[in-house]
Amino acid sequence: MPEKNSAIKILLIEDDPFLLSMYSIKFEAEGFIVITADDGEKGFEMAKREDSDIILLDILMPKMNGFEVLEKLKADEDTREIPVILLTNLNQKDEIEKGLILGADDYLIKAHFMPSEVVTRIKKILGRD
Image (cartoon, rainbow, N blue to C red; front, side, top):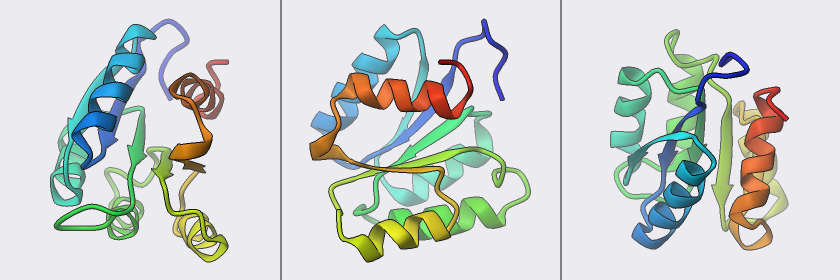
């Protein structure tokens, strides 16, 4: 959990270059430190290497999907405590349940949330609201 005055470090794992850029710009404007990965495999490796405060994770990605990444994150001693928000366009009830059962702290449908609302959710999960 980051200290109240320290910058929040986000690992954003998203394969869509437009969304990756849009969220990165918004998060940096909020004073967050943003690290990005454009596929699940790179994302998991970055989670192991970087000391992120929170991970935003897409589900439909190349090399390793978000559910697989989430399972590996929660099974790994070094990464299991990092909060994870699934940020995806998959909005079926069973997919949402699967994400939460696997250990996600929140599940946001991209089409339903503006980047500013995602920022609010991040701050809430980290107790910085």
